[in-house]
Length: 423
Image 1 (cartoon, one colour):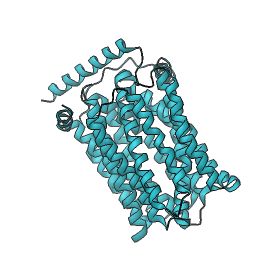
Image 2 (cartoon, rainbow, N blue to C red):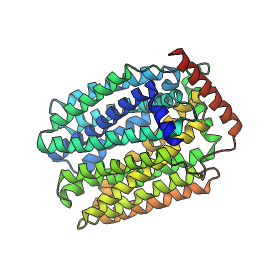
Image 3 (cartoon, helix red, strand yellow):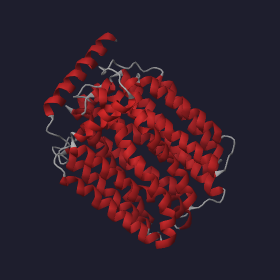
Image 4 (tube, helix red, strand yellow):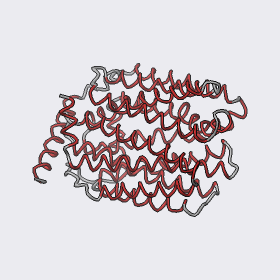
């Protein structure tokens, strides 16, 4: 049955279009920061500089995240995604000039984050509209696979290009895949979505917050994942390129580690196509805790293979969580407000992650790298487990089932009507 659902999802023209666009976009998202980080390090930057530049992406998500969700619910989501990818092409083009200024590179990362804050909510909401409720688990899993395919190709290609060719070649590759994503979206025919009457942006944001407030487990998971991003994932992203050069043999380990993270995620996505856990929340939270192994493994330079295994396991766990989380949000939140709830999820992480990125370098200078990695590992394990204390988290479900069932039926009717319109 699951295999049949997967085949039926891939039989959808609109889903295939989103599938191709996502692979290309994610590959660009992964190549671009590798080129930026290596440019900084080549110009003499340190962990503090890298953290500050990477933090500018999250600053953009904080500033534009809610607006991205509002406009993705107001406008055709295809138009929002097209504008985002076109803007990214313009941003990456600046890197072809060979710029090495931390201020300019930081500005590029900031603008890329702004584009992402509009693209992500629009994509997730559009994905929910092109699939029926029964197709969504397989669709989410297949998109997770596509995300990881792009994430595997991105760091690997980025590391290869900066090692064997030049940073400019990496920027050129990022421009190429963003252009491919843009061209794919031109073919998308977005189904009609039942939209509520337009009000002020402030009221529409409040409606998204209300959806989360009514389902306390959603808010709990959003807060916990945001804290884990700040205390665990951010320190890894800052220290990994530095430790790769100092303890693990060079930039190749940096790209390889990110690629292995994506390989594990690819396997997690494949497993999620056929696995439907009864306690989806428990499975997702368990997957999150695995990331805590990564920072603990990074202070063992004598055994790099342990770090590689941990990166792969962490990717597997993150993808299991991501699939269960996305499917649950699509099931629990009305389609016309889904983009706003998705943007709240992103903005929560965006608000805290920059603190982790900026403070990791100074904390490492004061406390030492090993204590910072140890604290990051403990936070990565303990924080997700606290989410299970909130009712509804174990199953990623709330008591508002009747309203959600009606919303699911409404979306399915719209999706089927759109399907027949296209015949």
